[in-house]
Length: 166
Image (cartoon, helix red, strand yellow):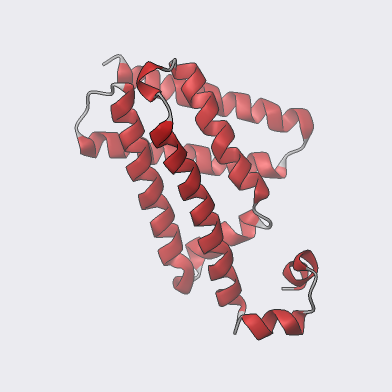
């Protein structure tokens, strides 16, 4: 709460004037983060996915999502809270469902000829890999961060290529 109050330029007492407890603060931060993730996913609807090269599409998707991860302050703490605090777990579930649904649709638009349940399974693999490595990239600096993003890009392209060629 000290860091949050400092970041927004108010006292801790003022912060608790707006929020009754730490969970309410984390819930508000989580909702904001989910809204930003949703905005990125909605952008995909306007992309010409059907005519994009796989490598270009993956790079564009990763860059768009990574921007949201980088903008969110104390993201690792927020994500850990969303996973472990019962009052915040619904946000984690909403995040996963939202991403999986959108990404499974992107896969269909890419030409992945699999049933919905299988596209959703692959979308979960995509989600878990990107989510974990975006958190890692956020903690890294400079060249190390760039190399991890390059590795993530390679992993996702390889995953998708194998499923598109079947």
